[in-house]
Length: 64
Image (tube, rainbow, N blue to C red; front, side, top):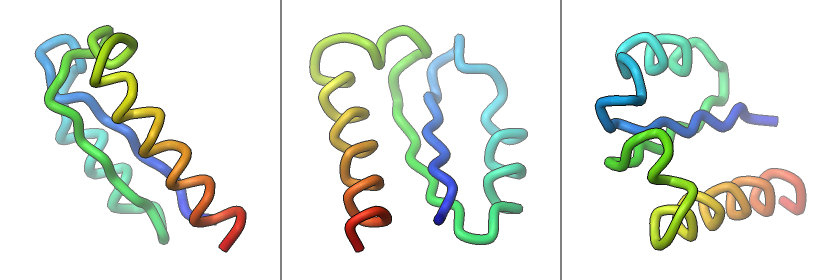
């Protein structure tokens, strides 16, 4: 099963370069980047987008 890599780009998210380097090493990694900060993805539209991406990933790889 591929590895999901979900990453925020906001200033509280830490350096994205390290995360992306590690994600590139995952043989079947899938990367999603979000413009919001770390805590902003837990509310409102950002939360809905992240959850939808997570569910789509699981549906794609678990149901085929």
